[in-house]
Image 1 (cartoon, rainbow, N blue to C red):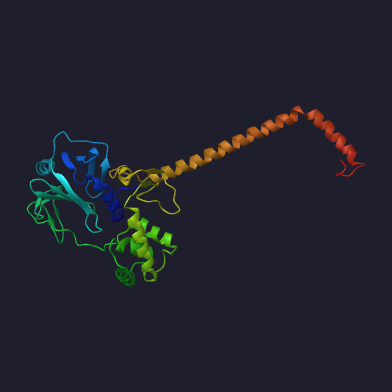
Image 2: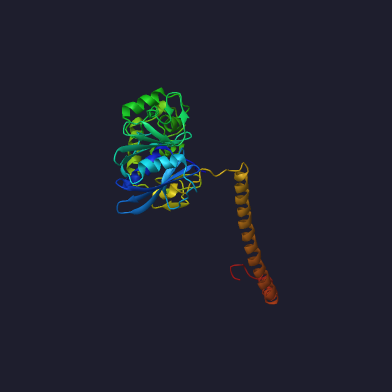
Length: 332
């Protein structure tokens, strides 16, 4: 069950959220692990943006607010109420979204969707005003009165060159090409394998055997696909474009709509997979039983018909038997 989003999926979401630029913040709510922004979007009216640090952000239609706003919520309201959204961007190819707000003074809201996640409010110089949760990392501290520092960047799959990709594949120590693309380009397993499927390449070959030129061409195709994404909901995943050799359960008009169905706090029982497997087995057995019952009913009807016509059939068989004594089958 999907509980978060990848760098590529975040890029698709951010593309869809661009219509919120120039929109106005009308209210902010905070309940448990969710922060909700009520916005007035130009030409769209009221829209709700849900943010779950470390998981995802998306537009939603459901609003839950706490009886009493948290201290963090009060800080957001103080600085961002009635502010206008100036820009929404993904930080390089990281799982980080940056909202730039314009009020009397400019502010940044930085949403971290990696690890445990965070929401950080800063001034125009990245001085931290408030945070969702205080954090101490090896190379940075995220708390009020500190200067916000972005994490050390990884490979940017959106702007990588053929030469850079070739060098990464040549130096990679990963066990196969799919793993190298998934981890070293931060594409994730689903999209790494999808690229190789489209290319018709073996995912199990050494990274050194990867065709950087073809991989780069597919990355550019993906960038085109996520400019206007749709929500493709599969059994275990939600993607912004269709996957090869897989059938969707549902397709939504927007990727945001599909992502909003994720429940990252759903606790999966260790027995749930087994229960679902048993349910599928029972369904198959019920289908087999229904087929057998149909066959039994059909054969019973045939038997009853034969019984009804027993005497004429017996007489006919007797005639055929007598004719066989003097004639060939072809003559009968």
